[in-house]
Image (cartoon, rainbow, N blue to C red; front, top):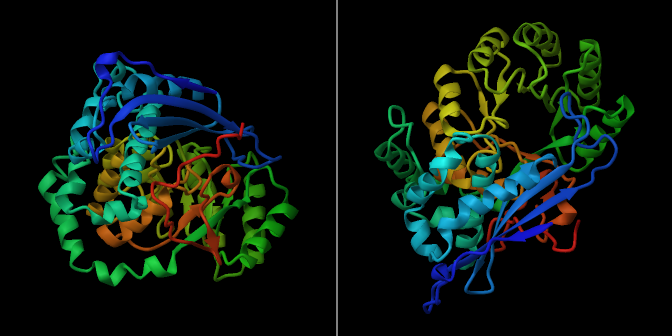
Length: 430
C-alpha cells in the first residue's frame, strides 16, 4: 500500500542547475510473509517482517528511500507519522539540508504535538528513522556514491553537523565528537583494508525459536559450509532445559572454536535471567542478548555484573540516544546493538556509535533492515571511529525483495558499490 502526501503549491520548487530539491513525500506500507518458524523468538511467535517506507520525490529522477522496521501491525501508523514529520523537507535542496542536518533532525524530533506521543520513542521515532534514512539515501545517490563512502568523505565537522547531540553534553559535546573523529583520521589507513576483505557476518537464521532440534543442527552445518564461524540461537523457553539442550547441540555441531551468541529477546525477569544465564554459560557464549526488559538499565547492570566474565549485549529495542547513554554510563551493556531502523535513523545511529566509542563499547548492530544499511555503517564505524572490527548480523529472509541485496561471500559482507544506502525495494513485491 502506498500513499502520497499532497502539499500546497507554495512548497513547490523550481530546480536550479545542479541542485536536487525535495518536491513531495510518499509512503509505502510493505509487509512480507515468512516461512514456517522463520523469525520466531521467545516473545514474537507470529512475526511478519514489514517496512514503513519513506520516499522522497525530487526535481530529478532520483528518489530517497528510507526504511523503518516493524512486525506488521501498526505499520500503517508509522506511515501516517512519516507524512507528518517529513513535511518541513518539501522545497529543500538536499545539499543545503544535509549541511546542517542536525538542526532539521532536532526540529523533526521535537515537533511539539508529535513529541508528546514519545518523546523520541514508539511510532513517532520509527517514522523519524524512515525520514532520516531517506535523507541520507538521497544525499548519497545525488553524489553518486555508496553511503559508506559519502560518510567517509565528510570532514569531522561536516559529519557532526548531521547529528543532534542534545542531552548528551555532559558526556559527549560537539567539540569532543569532532576531536574523536579527528584523532581517528590519523590511523584510517590502518583500518581501510576492510574495504578489500569485506566485513565478517554472523548467521542469526540458524536458530529461530520454533525450529526443531534437527533444523538447528542442519542449519548450523549449512552456515559453516557457507563460511560462517559465528552464529546465534534464540533462547527463552518456558523450560530452561530446552534452551540448554539446544545451545549444547549447536556448540557440539559447530565446535569449540565457533562463536555462539544466545538471544532471549527480553523474555526473563531479572531473577530468572540470573539463574538461567549461569546454566547457559556452560556452552561458553560470546554474549547473552536482551536478557530482560529493554528499558531496565539497572536490571541489565545486575545481570552483567553477576554473569561476568560472560557479556551482555542489548540495544535492538532501545529507542533513543538518552537511554543508550544511561546503559553506557552504568556499564550495563558490553555490546551496543543500536539499529538504524529503530532509533532515529542513520543520524542517531552515528551519534550513538560516537557515544559508544567514547565509552569503549563495541557497536554490533541489530539488523532490522536485513543488513542493507548497516553494511555501510559498520564500515564507517570501523574506519572513521576506530570501532572494533567484529561482525555484522546476517538475516537473509527478505533479500529477494531488495533491488541490490547485501552480498555475503564465504561468511563476509562484500562492500557495496552502488550509490545510496542499499534500501530500494523491488516495486512489484507485495
